[in-house]
Image 1 (cartoon, rainbow, N blue to C red):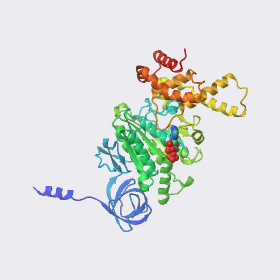
Image 2: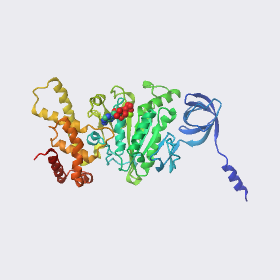
Image 3: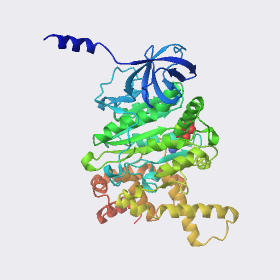
Image 4: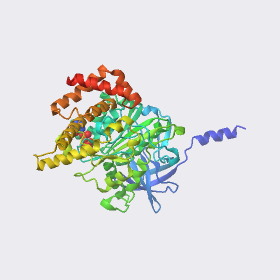
Length: 492
Ligand code: ATP
Ligand code: MG
């Protein structure tokens, strides 16, 4: 009678695994033989516990991407296939933590207790699982909230040259989620450690780390980890989305990710295509960005919004990787070097930036106030160029447009790491639409920006609440702003 129990016990002590042999090690790609049951995208383990991921096959050999240091892997070593798929732990415990691409803690704050484990390459939610977007993601950047609105579940590309404020726009959005019940994830790919430290310090200082997860795939970690980092960030986000939360993910940046993948592909001896990128460079990014979305209420109603960042050279938005990404996102925010150098920051280019779905979720009041802004601004820029050639003899209408445009530019200029709440933006846009700011000097406008909303909020706190609750501009609110304006400008 006791025999089955003994059998069961002894069986539990055994681990089923296939043992292969390392045939060659080339940088971070290992060729191994003797593992016939391996499948693509699964984890294998080397002798000293270093993990690897199966990336492909060549005749009888398996190509493995090393997810760790390859220094200790030598030809002839054993490699084990335990049939483990590429899964990572996920859960609430990741909030406030920094992890690597395998979701292992990297901040020295101890283990993270996972609630579940999710596949790194999960399928994106199907069409029937999603609903159209209807909630605004408040980014805290004035131009975005007014003219290029972002909806929860949207994928919005942040594109621009080096040092144009891309990271700052994304970080402002994270800072602005304080108290708004949005889980943020910052995924760093191919950046330096000092870049990452700056971000961490900022998030910590501004108490934004409590609702943020940082996934580190910095340039000094193994290439395999840099490749997996965005998928890890996405998978960690999916846990929160499946549990009905809104998630905001920043991928900083996908240009580096494509370079990493090109490096891997060339070492895997895959045929190089345009600019030496492999044929499936399009696929790896679309597979990633498709995972964003807005789930239907029956599935918890969670959402995942993506801000992939792409770095380009000399303003060339038509580069290979950037055009691919533009075509697979719901809009782009283009940051312009010349605007940045002129001091117009955030240097968002009105002409080339669009949000294809965001206005469906925009607050009605904001829609009403901002409907003409883009046109007005573009006309203003044309006029500025014209007046550089011929300054005299402008019509009255053109002069008004010039004044309005310059006031608008000043209103939209914003310091970094100072997100602005929607209520404040709405009040500014209302005042702008009344034409009161057109005749102000630049210095007066700067002072107005600093002082007016605070004094209005102090005088009419209940009106500010009403703007948020009603999301529209009632007569009552208008009157209160007008009263505050009269007091501020001392006009009768
Ligand atoms: P990189 O190409 O290095 O990733 P980036 O495009 O992400 O750069 P940031 O790192 O965000 O750019 O910003 C570059 C510099 O510009 C920083 O020194 C930052 O302080 C400054 N900066 C960014 N946005 C603003 C702003 N709104 N106002 C003033 N300075 C800004
Ligand atoms: Mg950056």
